[in-house]
Amino acid sequence: MTGRLDGVFTFGVEKGRGSRLRRLMGVSFGFVYLVYPVSDIVTGKVGGAGAAWQLAALAAFVTTYVAAVLSPGDYGDRGRWTVPLMAVTTAMAIVFPLLFGGGWTALPIYVTVMLSMALPLRPALVAMAVMALVVLVDSRLAGAEAETIVLLLVQVWTLGILFASVRNTRMLVLRLEDAQREVARLAAGEERLRIARDLHDLLGHSLSLIVLKSELAGRLAEQGSDRTAREIADIESVARQALVEVREAVTGYRRRGFSEELDGARAALTAAGLRVAVRISGTPLPDGLDGLFGWAVREAATNVVRHARATRCEIGVAHDGSGAVLEVGDDGDAGPYEPGSGLRGLAERVRAEGGVMEAGPVPSGFRLRITVPGPAAGPATADPGAPGGRDSGVPAV
Image (cartoon, rainbow, N blue to C red):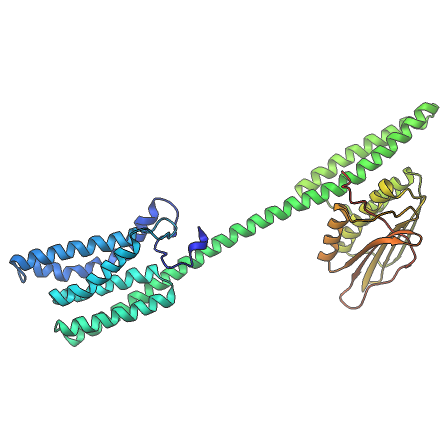
């Protein structure tokens, strides 16, 4: 629909039954100019067969003019009869002043209004110039006075420019509405992507921890250990927290920071039997990096638990105000590496903050490294030899 707005004929671009009525009202208010030929007939200035011919000509002009204005569809689609009707109307506006003279010289004004509403700006300006020339020639041949000719020329240009401006304004409004709809559509898509990404990260971590604790509780139950009840209580607590986090993610109120995610990652890794070492140096993380690094630690820890078969995991964070570095690694078997949906989503978050993410095998295992430079200088440095996380390419949930 909207792709047709740059076409030739755009009389009607509104939606609904009232569009043609509004269109007709917009271009036909100037029927007042027909008072001049009508008055010649009513006052008896023209009588007999001449009056009958002029009445017929007047009826034909009004009919074709109105039909041409209403022929396009609700969105400016060119109707089958649009071009012929506009051509006939234009021909009448040129010929009738030559045949009848007098007040008929105002007919080109109607054609100017019609074409100004139907054509883009440059063709409309050409149409105005042509109609001005028609008015000049017809008026001179009809013996009109100079003042009348000047008045008609002024009206051709002023009304033509007025209705061309109305048309262009309407086009701008419609394009703005289209742009607003597109923005709303993109925003909805982005929100769906955010929810999907958050749910992937949240449930992947929580479900991995539940599985690990369930396996541990099962082994403890077989041994008759008193820790079984505590592990089951932990499973219930993790499940309830996962429900809360899912609700927060869907409603957009999730605000867990780096310290909370670090505690959760340490608990999950410890439950999986890994030795965990955490190194934090420098100043506290700003809000933007706090949330980003929180997501990164959660994703990396989930992948280490699910895929690494490691015995040790190291997490290092360095921030000096001018840049920040996060490294998460393990000493497990790297194996074939292909980024999955979790790491791809994390990489998008890092790029949005102007940072760089590196993930891949290293001699000591696997390493995930995120570098986010500050506004004043390059990134801070961390131990380059620390191993990192992985993503098997299989979604965590």
